[in-house]
Image (cartoon, rainbow, N blue to C red; front, side, top):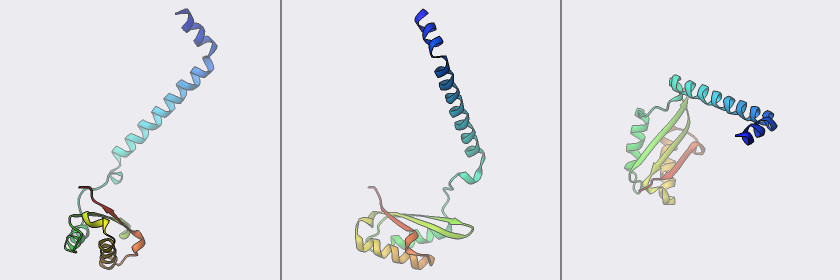
Length: 120
């Protein structure tokens, strides 16, 4: 017990700094956590838009695509990005067909379309 008391006396400043840092980190963590839970805009909507549903149906009908899932991100009504996850994404020709179909259907630049292979 005496060793612990001596250690604390010798390293008092370091211990105070470590404790203050821990309190600061904990405070920031809980403030951020409460902001995320109280802000409805921070939650990602799991409901599909009509456009996402229609685009998914179109893609599933393209030869080689197979099962597909689509997510469209928008900011003030403008499409910022499209993510497509599908079974046929490993085939370069299928990827090209997907890219062309989505770009045409949504009238967007191909640069904001990302295509990924679906895990089986």
